[in-house]
Image (cartoon, rainbow, N blue to C red; front, side):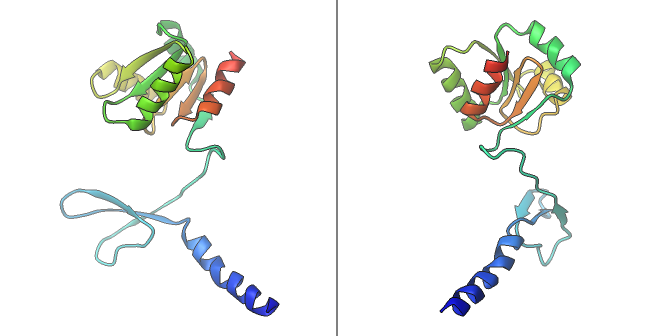
Length: 152
């Protein structure tokens, strides 16, 4: 019985390891695709995936501190959030801040060229991107935002 269980667990190890590899390829129509298996008929690029947060997709960094400080000084709110209209996580973050009376300034990166440039200077990887003082949060996690605000 113990030997069977051990064999079963050892058989699952390759499955766990292969789940961490991600391949990126572009099809004939120019569409970018991501998959866990390399495509047979297209050249692909193996992606290096790094988990930056145990709490979720939010990643907090102090990079670009000088620019972040300048951006914070011009912002009307305590938090600057870079968004798009179609981003559901952006809506969730704004709803959370509204419900908790957290002042913020919203900048849509698709409607404003200056917002897009600021977003790129801050190392934007996706939306939402939140700026709190000199700290940048890529993604949204309520607990992480609360901890950032508590440090201010």
